Amino acid sequence: MALAILFILVIKPVLSVITRFDGQTLELVHWLLIETAPLIIFLTWTSVLAGTLNTYKKFAFPAISPAFRAAVNLTVIFALRGLYGVHSIALGYVVGELARLIILFVIIKKLNLFKLRLSFRVGARLGKFFKTASYQTMGMAAVGLNPIVDRTMASWLGAGSVSVLHYADRLYMIPLTFLVSGLMVVLLSHWSQRYQQSGKQRLKQDVYKAVKVVALITIPITLLLIIFHQPIVKLAFGRGQFAQERLSDVGWAWVCYLLGFTLYIVGQVFVRAHLTLKNTKALMQCAFFLVLLNILLNCILMKFFNVAGIALATSISRVFPIVYLGILFSKK
Image (cartoon, rainbow, N blue to C red; front, side, top):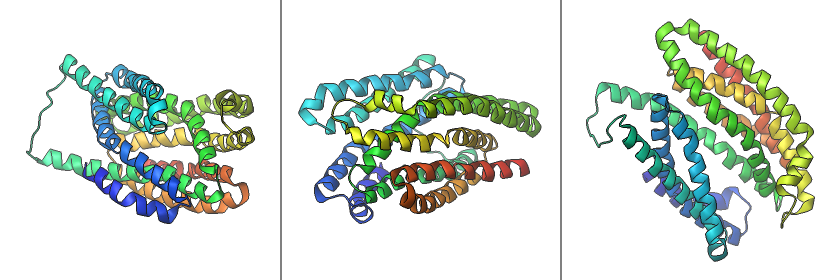
């Protein structure tokens, strides 16, 4: 909650410095951020509960819960869009995540896996847990800056550039979510159990086998999406009030994102390997370097390829986690 309040207080002056939005747009963005601020609290709790259920190998419930969130989200948006306009989207996200949180609480209570209660005792194990988790939290916060950095730098390229990047990113996230949300959660639980039973050599074998399988699955998917990117973009956005001249820009930005699809999934395999080893400090260091690399590549490539250059910078930067985390994993 403290972070949410701090974020609201500092975000408007920060945006006025780093973006090139006009006053009206800046005010709208600020209000939308205020309206979505409760998501920070709800997402934290849903992540904790979903992670706990995954630990107990109850994968189905965390996997299905986003569908309920999406259903509530869309219902709120369609019901209130005429009354509140774009603000209905922010309200839809907040109400949808709250619905997901309530569902996960009910599931945990029904399964009777453990008791939820407040405790103010801090033991040695809890202190060690918070130390390990703090590195991961800071790393996730750093990685979360990349989309903000990309959109901020896209705002320097003229009207409509932020929207082009956003729509391309949404298309990119569809195949990415299917693989990461499903495969990676199961891998982490499976590897943790096998690592405790059989040691590091077993984990090493599992990780490199997963890298090969992921590459074999994702490379054909990437090629198919790139080949058919134009009809897919037209099907997704080629109607309504979407500017037709922007469809080509969205398509090329999406292709540039797709070039890093396999690299990102392979990188996530090594992320899960380090999580199994509780080596979260390496993940934090990797995240900080990745943000700096992304900014540098954005500055270079956006001069030559406009909005698509920002997407291409994201894809090229995907190489770094594979190299950095892969070397550290081999040494460890």
